[in-house]
Image (cartoon, rainbow, N blue to C red; front, side, top):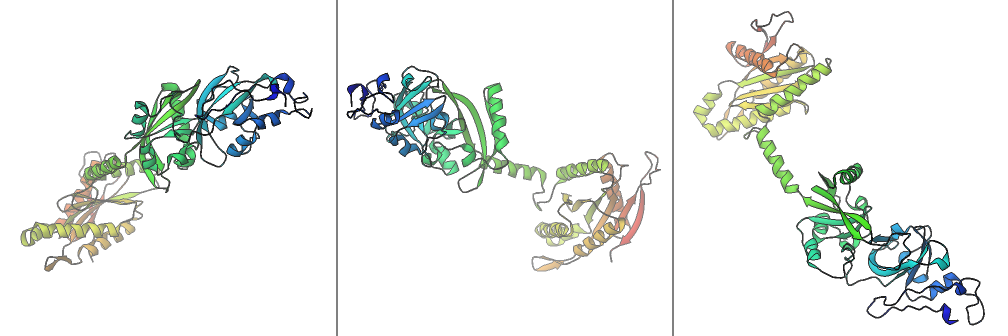
Length: 460
């Protein structure tokens, strides 16, 4: 082969490209007599003679690649340079010679960091560039996000890797770098992450829209954050706080830094505090605050759907003070726990049972049904209350007095319903306890007139 067809650059042992990249002279293009036998040397043959991975890039697509390159990245047909070279890879259209370090996404294998040079290669057509790559930099596979820095393991890199929050650098959703905390939270090694997408690794189905929303916020405000869930490599959902900010990757490229903070313990503590604020500490039932909130929602739903009725029951245990005085407060607590459990068993999941304090309980029956249905439930509760409860070395039996209000559009305030249910309950006690009374408020009752009570039944 003539000397003008020989490769003029070489790769030294240290892995640096010291000389200019080889340029194919016009005389060596296909059709030129460059071989020793007088036969022409084609462009693909010339690429194959190069001792390094070589690509021809045209219009942000890989136009050709030698065997070394194909062996590493797989087929180069219809492959975009943006899919192959991730990170600080010089933008297409710049014909000047440039050195770079970037992430090379191999086909079906792990991504690796490489260094190389790229420059215009007009001999292969207008807008064509020749890309020469060294072997993958196995000794330092995480240098792509260092903004073209030559320093390895700098202070900033060490800070990135030792951060207490999970961090990744991405370019168009492809991961260029991860730190140790990200691997710990989500269970993926850095080798698995490089070149993959966050969608493939940790974003649950149904949460894809969050990324588009966050990126839009970053573009408009320069930063975005959210509390959401992501899944680990085992499928476990993790509560995380996410912050996304733009970063420069070098060579005119931009990407994003994504920070993940594991907030599972915070969420658990928040849930515990919320439960404590809204539930009775002894029985675990809803407290007065939660009950009033549920009743408010039920009343609002009735205004939207008049066909969906509800009822409120106010319940007070009969002679509970005698249990405390005779057996002690510990025995009284045991009785209250048994009552709470029996009330839960009598109600449906959509109903609410709350302890207002002492031996007072309140119930909201969602879609309560007819008066006969409510009466049947009240009788069942009475029977459950009268079953013996083991307390220490003995047993105790109690009964309950109940006042019942059927919800209607005549009520505007929850306090009015509780007032009438309480009045009906005291009427039951006056009539001998162990019974329930329905409160009836005629639609024609003038505002401010006393409530009307109706005795409906006694415990069987």
